Length: 347
Image 1: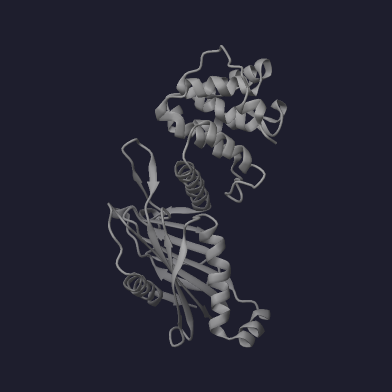
Image 2: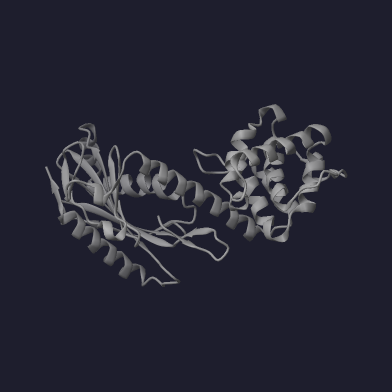
């Protein structure tokens, strides 16, 4: 599809739009571009827009009214007419927000990617808004990061326990396979975040210690013995866990260091992942938006009893802090994980 009816239309709506309405208009045009007006859920679209800082002064009902009005313009005058009006009304400060609105509408919420089918439209939108490739790519990354952060919060919602409200100083796995002294405290905003098969301990100072645990099926014993422990752990951590848990959500992340530890925990495998803008904590920018910090994540996998464990620790970089060499960072985070693992009482 060429999208000429949108981006090459000679018509411009006479309906006056504010710069904020122009951002919403781009979202509306994007939502209808490959479908029909009847398929657009105005309330859902308004809910997405309401999360934008641009609409912080609007109520959700007011945002819905804006979307309904914009859909009406499309019904009466067409997509091209509304887009041209939006482009005319969009202030320089909100051009990036306009593009972000289009990205959010096109983003696959489950996969956190833009499908190949949607890429031609997004490229046309970028060109129409006169954005450089670097600017567009940065906005796409920021939108994906924001969605991932929201997903992380949803995962936390399964069970979030403020440390000061936790009755014990020790966390016990629901499956009874381990206990561990809680490594964060309430004075620093300590939280325990858990769902089936994983528990994370975090605070406001960038601490993240996490334990993923999986019952080790008997049929995997044969595979482990067949290919050897090093290759087996590598396949679990490098080929499966890291791509699914990290690469899928942080496009620029990459494995910087790997190490097989034959004599540790009766065999373990360690990985260091560089995660640009991949920290679980963010910094506030001057314009009020939040940007996730750069971070390294160390991950150690091993088997204990009838469970396979992946224990991880994050190091975030604050205020332009420069990381040391990869080897230094790998060693430091690994030692931090070792200290944490030593505190785990396996049962």
